[in-house]
Amino acid sequence: MGQKILAIIIGSAVLGIGVNGFIVPHHLLDGGLIGISLIFHYYYHFPTGLTMIFLSIPLYILSWFFNKRYFYYSIHGLLVSSFLIDVLSFLRHQFTLNILPSAIIGGILIGCGIGIMLRYETSTGGTDLLAQILSKMVSINVGLLIFMIDGIVILLGLKVVGLEKFLYSFITIIFVGIMTYLTVIRKTERV
Image 1: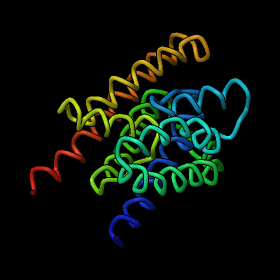
Image 2: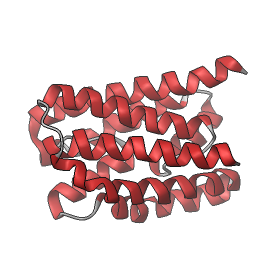
Image 3: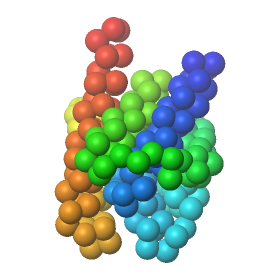
């Protein structure tokens, strides 16, 4: 249990740094509920983490009926990651990288944060939670499922961020998917 708590804290912090330090300054998108929350942030100036919590409610209801263990393990990840995304918002003006390195580094950090949590059977909730449920049903790697969901989300944000930032956001989710996959697959290879 101590390892799971540590994974939630470290994974959430890495995720929060990726979002705030590299994605938000360039108005890029991530996928999943983080991406949808970023759309609300860019358009309405809602706090990203708090928006994640509200948008996750229907998926938590689904997980309650599908697999209560996912519900219990992910609720902590959602709350901690949402909190740290909002707390670490001061990082939005700390780095002065160009858009391409920011898209790549942000994707790597977000993917590592998500992967760390998934390795310990927890997540940020949202579409990561949905991907965990679907992965068990269709036997597809959770990282690949997250990548597909993320692609759909950034397509939804195309009108908000424009074509150029959409393309850079696509680079971000490629790195999120790769890093999530590599982080999760390493655990499976050890077992």
